[in-house]
Length: 79
Image 1 (tube, rainbow, N blue to C red):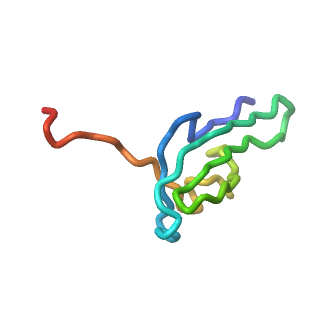
Image 2: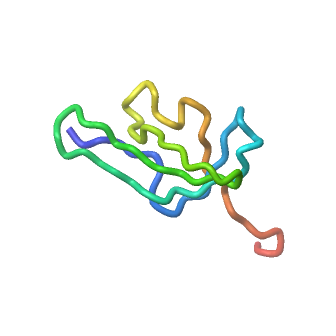
């Protein structure tokens, strides 16, 4: 069974609870090819600390369920 990943390399994210971390960027993805293996992402935040999270939407501790959200980049000048 293939893991349903949430984040990919280069995504900009923020945490809903820990706002003082600032905006983060996904700098590494690790996906296990073994059944039951973990999919992880490493994110560096504006506070200078790298944090690792589970990146499988089928896992109850996925970074999405713990508060990580993708920051949508847009320009008010574009229509």
